[in-house]
Amino acid sequence: MKKLKCHCGQVEAEINIDNFNKILRCNCSICKRKGAIMSIVNNDEFKIVKGKEKLKIYQFHTKVANHYFCTVCGIYTHHNPRSNPSKTGFNLGCIDELDTFKLQDVDINDGLNHPLDKK
Image 1 (cartoon, one colour):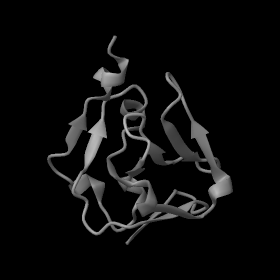
Image 2 (cartoon, one colour; image 1 turned 180 degrees about the horizontal axis):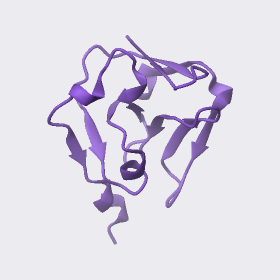
Image 3 (cartoon, helix red, strand yellow; image 1 turned 180 degrees about the vertical axis):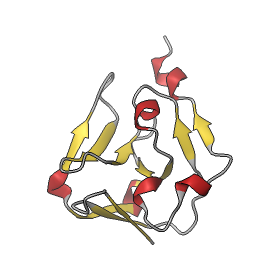
């Protein structure tokens, strides 16, 4: 079990995960701007335990994905991707015991060329 929290501590979540098997960055229009390194779990493995009322959802383009951020400090905490809304991606930088600057060989998710955008 890992604990995630935003910068100001108003939002906290528990993640039922021991090892981060999937670590990635995404090059889509929002992720390249926020620059977060993420991991992902099933929705039932991610639970907001504090500050749900402090979260705001940002949606764009197809308005399927939900990107959550703290309304107090502005930190992106997690999201539900449009490619699989039954998953929760989360900001590894919000886990205090993890130093994201020591992570190597982080995979890149090609959100810039998302398959749902193909015509």
